[in-house]
Length: 263
Image 1 (cartoon, rainbow, N blue to C red):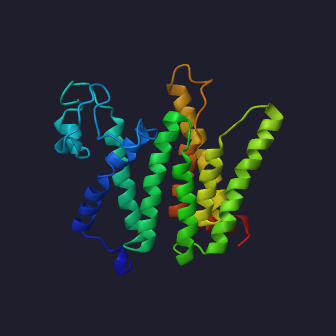
Image 2: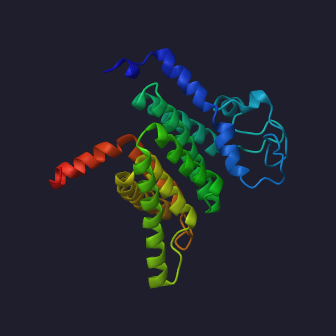
Image 3: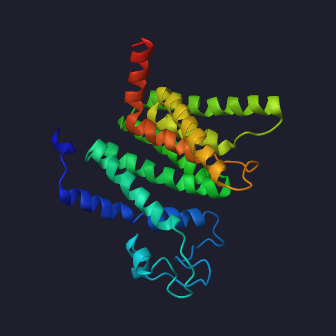
């Protein structure tokens, strides 16, 4: 392996500690996506409004020290906090392992964090805020100027294909059934994925997100009560598809071309 892919114990430990700090950024933003005022308040208990002290806000460690409860009112803290922290650390560590210490790695980390936040927001609210999806879209177009992953022309084509593909599916489904099968936020998110990784990646994203949706959605419906008529957000599965396309997209495309004899 090249030098940029060599790892030491200290490097991995430092990386994990750094990206565990995303807790207050991802989970808190998810809860405060519609803030009550222009100036956002500090982190606080949702039950008693107790302001979270610095030592109570250390990812994972604070959860263990507090035994999963608010230090003031003893209300149980949701497990989702430490699970999101752990997921963020694992994915971030793997991203840097995969891309090495490079500009690609920095961009991939930003994308990973955004995708986690988008997934949490869409899962809870059935809405993907434009501030997230459009930021990713423009950022993907912007970094293509330096050909971080793809060139500008490929980025623009990917964004257009990503948006128009789901837009077409949306209107076809609506004409046939009279119902809206997905939201415009999904169009923008797939457009962002296309802007980051190009036209070929759009197919990978759609296939991977469909597989993830079928598997995870089936498990969710089987385990949840009274949920068969409840709409299921597609954003988290698109996020899975985009992340998979980022890490293994090229390998998946090459495998398909070889398997189909098109290569």
